[in-house]
Image (tube, rainbow, N blue to C red):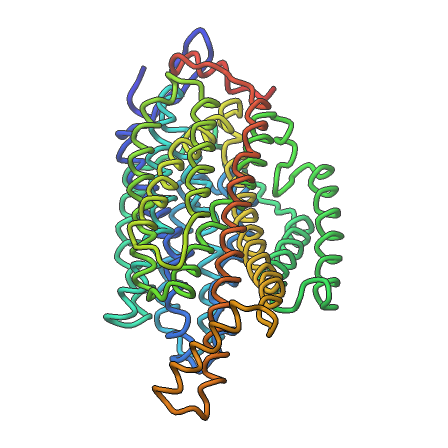
Length: 534
C-alpha cells in the first residue's frame, strides 16, 4: 500500500489511504466540530444577559437559539450534496471560515436583529461540519478501526453540549456574554490551518463542472424544516393546535415535505439523496438516532430546570452538577472504541440502552431534599451509556454504505438526530407544564376544611406567622406557604413522571436492534466487501 493518499489494488477491490496520520486528521475535523456543537448550548444560560444588553424581552432572546437551529437544520440534509460538489476539504474550509466570521459578528452585534442574522449565518455554516467530519473520519480510518474514530468523534459531540452551559455561565458571570462568541475566533483559525494541512479529498470525490442546484427541492425542504422548527419551539407557548398559526404552519410543513420527497425521488440531481434509505442499516440507525435524540435532549432540558426551579441551584451550579456526565461519556468512549470490531455492535448498543434506562430510573427517584451527590452519580451513569450507544450506532449505521454516499448518509443521520432533539425538548416541556397542572388539580382536593391534616397544618402555620409578624396577615401567609409547597410537590411528581417516561422510551429502542444487518469486518480488505448497498 502506498502512503501518499493513493489507491491500492487488491483482490477485493481498491481502498484509499490518506497521506497524513489519521489521528491528525481526526484532531483537525474534531476541533471544528467541537466548536460548532459547543455553540448550540453555550448561549442558553446567557439569554437574560443578552436580552438586557440588547433591550429585548427574554422571550424574544430565545430566537438567538432557535434561529441557529433552524438554519442548521436546513443545511444538514444538503451537506452531502455540497461536500460532493465542492469536495470535503473545500467545503470544510468554507464552513469554518464563515462560522468564524459569523462568530465575530455575533460578538459585535448592537441589536437583537443583528445578532439573530449573525446566528442564522453561523448555523448555516455549522450545519455541514458534523456530517462532513463524520464522513472524513469514516473514510480516513480503515474499516476495522472505525470504532476508534467514532469514539473520538463521540467525545466531542457528547462533551461539548455538556460544557456549553458551564463555560457560557462562567464567561458571562466573569466577563461579558459577547466573549462566548469571540472565543470561537482563535479556535476557528487553528481549525482552518489544521484542515488545510492534514485533510484531503479521496479520489472518488469528483467535483463535476456542472454545479446545478435543485432549487425547487431545496426551497421546499427549507420551508418544511423552518415551519416544523417554529412549531416545536413556540408550540407550548401558544397551546399547540389551539393556535391558528400552528395549524397553518403544520399544513404548510406537511405539503412542503410531500412535494420535497416527490421531487427528490424524481429528479436526476437531488440535493438530498433519499434513495440511500434503501440501505437497511442506514434506515434503522437513522430512526434510532432520532428516538435517542428525543431521550437524550429531553433529559438535558429537564435536569437543569429541575435543579434551578425546585432545588434553587444557580445556572453555574446546575451546569456543574450536570457536567460529570462527560466523565462517564469519556470512559465509555474509550472502552467502546476498543471493543468495536471484537464484539457485536448490537450487543454494545443493548448494553448502552439498558444503562441509559437505569440512569433515567435513578433520576426518577430524585426528591427536594437530595444532595448534589445524588445528582452527580445518575449523570455519570447516564454519560457512561453514551459510548456504548453512539460509537457502535454510528459504525453500524454506515457499515454497509458505500464511501461515496457517506456524506449524504451522515447528513441525513445528523438531521434526524437534531429533529429528534427538538421534538424531545418540546415534548418534555409540554408534558412537564401540563403534568404539573394535572397534579395540582389532584392535590388541591386535599386542601379543604374537612381534611384534618390540612386544618392542623394551617393552624400551626398561622400561629407561627402570627408570633413573627402579627396576626393580621398570618392566615394569608400560611395559605401562601401551603400553596408553594403544593406547587413544588406537583412539579416534583411531574418531573419524576417525565424521567420515567424517558426511561421507558429508552428501553423501547431494544427491539429495533434486530433490524440491523451485521456485517463482520476483519480488516480493511474484508471491509471493502461490506460497503455495497444491499
